[in-house]
Length: 374
Ligand SMILES: [Zn+2]
Image (cartoon, rainbow, N blue to C red; front, side, top):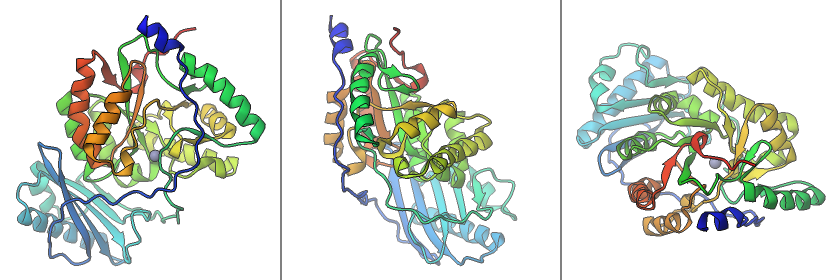
């Protein structure tokens, strides 16, 4: 009876105003290091292992040899300052550092067990957790779009029609090339992480998921995947699923159709290059979509995946509030939206996994979410 009621209750379709929020800077603990060009060095723990991320600005014309030498020194300095680190991640940006919106020149991930190998490198090659920018130029990006409620953009007549259709579709859970939620008669909810991958967070999140025995769908931003390819390979190697979250994480409905197609296709291409496969799923950045966005994604063979539960983890919520929201919304057939680079999400995942288990719900990737049959 309960399942039937859930099946009939339509999801609220809310078209709210765009939130004027900015991503709060998380107060991560800092390492005091003596290293030329150091912008910041943060570390974080998932309760089991501790990782650090060093952002360094380097001369634009620095040779790959000198970048490697600086990277080796950075790892040594970080480990000397904090021997408990199990992983050191590095991002070297051209100076002056303009923020994460620009492309790094060099990145690396050095887990403790591979430190010796990394420090012994004579050339920046032969180590699979190192990336040298092959000449990609950073594109000037507008403010990042934050995930919010799925928001339709388009002519008024279309929006009215779409609202009505979505209300109908939300009873079923999917329509055409889009998934709104799963079949609420099955004890399963999809676990999704947007904006991946990010240094510092990727190794910790993957470790947490492994310990919890959970698999998830990561909606990957193409440019992040480009600069941190080893984390994308880790995700696949650990049995997670990858989805397309465009190349630059721009507000798609504002773009000409050609640019929308490019944004989606470019992300597909990066993932194909890194993993040998193109993703099946797509999620529009910020939940902003239009008829053209849905159509183009579908033409590219992608199913658009919305969500039922966005606890707003990106808004810098205290973990207690985040946990309460996750708990309040968790339901069979749900699609949970979290972000891969939020400390509080990392922190509450074990409790959330426990809660799901207590309620007899399995959490997993979108591909295993049962959809209602007509
Ligand atoms: Zn996003």
